[in-house]
Structure formats: structure tokens, C-alpha cells
Image 1 (spheres, rainbow, N blue to C red):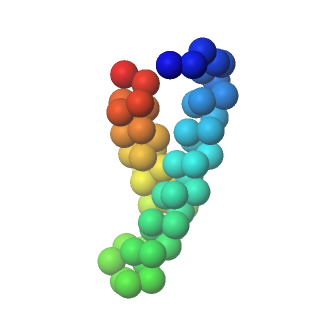
Image 2: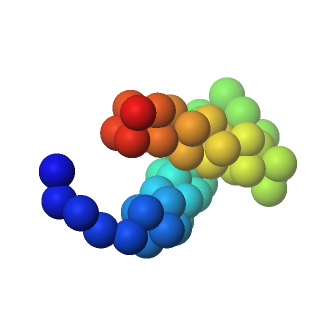
Length: 58
């Protein structure tokens, strides 16, 4: 594994998780499964961030 600054990886993970979370929530809101709100996007973002962190860094 390449050595690098962990902070850069965490920031990239947060940004990409937020983008993917917003797209997922938008798509689910489009088909009337979820309500698009900042809270929902935030929860999905945190879940994606944690899942990615556990899968990649641990």
C-alpha cells in the first residue's frame, strides 16, 4: 500500500461519500422511497463514510 497523508484520504472519503449519498437519496426520492432532506443525506453520508472506512482502512 502506498504511503500518504491519512487526512487527505479521509477528506476525499467524506466528499465522495457526500456526493454519492446525495445521488442515492435523490434517486430514492425520485421513485418515492425516501424524502430528500439534509438530514437524510447526512445519515446516508455518515453510513457510507463508516462503511468505506471500515472496508478500506481497517
